[in-house]
Length: 199
Image (cartoon, rainbow, N blue to C red; front, side, top):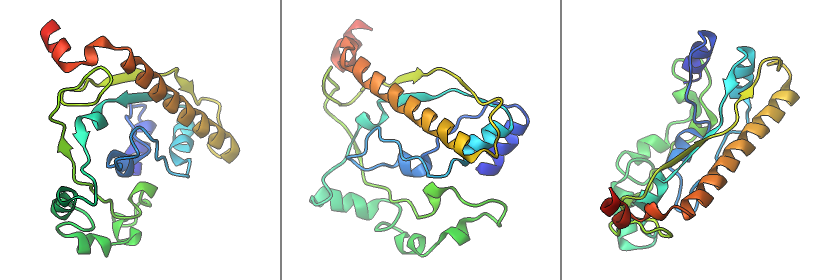
């Protein structure tokens, strides 16, 4: 939560933050590896207030272990009805909630990614083994860490400066994602059968 994030920064603790939150985690079939960060730069402003060192990082592979059945197929409709969120069990109750009811007692505003109730698309595991150029079961996970960005000296009240830092961090994460996708295409051991035989 934002409160915990600020509290940990104030104590000089390390924080793992996913600015895209729930919306980014439950993306649709055509949104793989697309950042869905909020418009507000609050996380950078809070980090600047406590002179934090921010390390952009990226991960590739999780979305490729899942299969999204077409929404207009019988299987897609069945999974949608069985999934939590609008359209699924309890969906009417979720759809009726608004941001004011999700404020957690009014201590802090809710993240932009949670302003609307999330929709969970029905997914299934991929059954065909991963190949070097094709997603599938047993697909590898790849992670990369970019150059650290020192926010010491950035005034948290400088909205323009924080917006520039925010844009730079976003571009750095997108660059790491692009690099990982290129590196994965060159990895001969992405092929599940070949990797299993080698190991």
